[in-house]
Amino acid sequence: MSFDDPIHRIDWRDTARWRAGGGRLSLALGAGIGFVLVACYALLWVGLPLRDAIISEGGWVESLSAYLYLVVAASLLMAGAMKLWKPSVRCPRHPFLLTAVLCLFFAREMDFHSRFTGGSFLKTSFYLRDDVSLMSKAIAALVIVVATATVVSLCGRYAKLVRNRFVAGSWLGVLPIAACLLVVFSKSIDMGLGTLGRNGVVLPVQWKVAAGHVEELCELLIPCCFLLMTVVLFFSKSNSVGHSASELSDGEDANATIRLDPERFTRAA
Picture 1: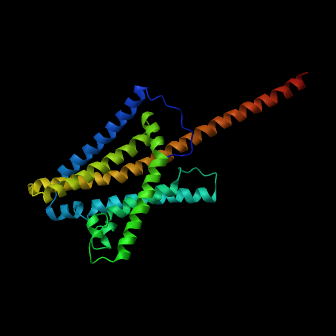
Picture 2: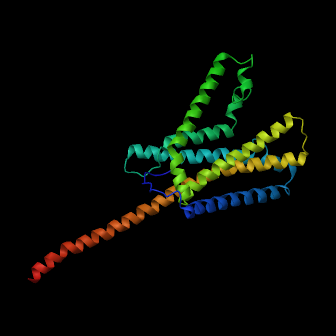
Picture 3: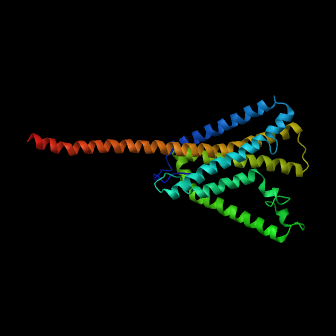
């Protein structure tokens, strides 16, 4: 996620730059872990009915995660539309592609992959079922292909930019990596619990509940990373524009002084 500003060449052997990005990533992940631990501890003091409403499947936390994706997607869509209407408007690169990926995150968070099909079409078992029509299987496969192509296109367009910004210690490079790590971690919890259950491993109920809470809270942090990226992106560009305008104003004043000097000298002569 970036404005169309130039990317400077980076010396990959500059370990100081890597340390800057790694330090900020550690800070971001540390803040996220602290938030998860504090939230889990606070939930222990909440009554069971209210706790289920907050953190359960389809609860307040999951709904907030989903709608945060829509908030960021709407802001990027609006920026892209304004760019089409007025080309001079500052706008992130590929805003419609970013919007599409965020909508995919929203759909995944709202369980659209299983809400209308009676089962998850992300699993191979869906395509082996006899009670599912061939048309439904084809549409589901097409959705997966389009979604995969969209994500791959986004990664291809932004991977190098994010890497450069991470090495430079920019939050616009740190936050995307933090979001990716949170996606991997939260899905690892979900898949790990499922794998243990299928293999007959019985975990204490308290462990399962705690793991579910950690998963939901980590999934809440993912759209928060995207939201912070959007805020940092627009805020940093606003400061950059203001600084450029200030420099231009100073330059114009200097030029005006230069233009007046010959006139003053002519009158003096």
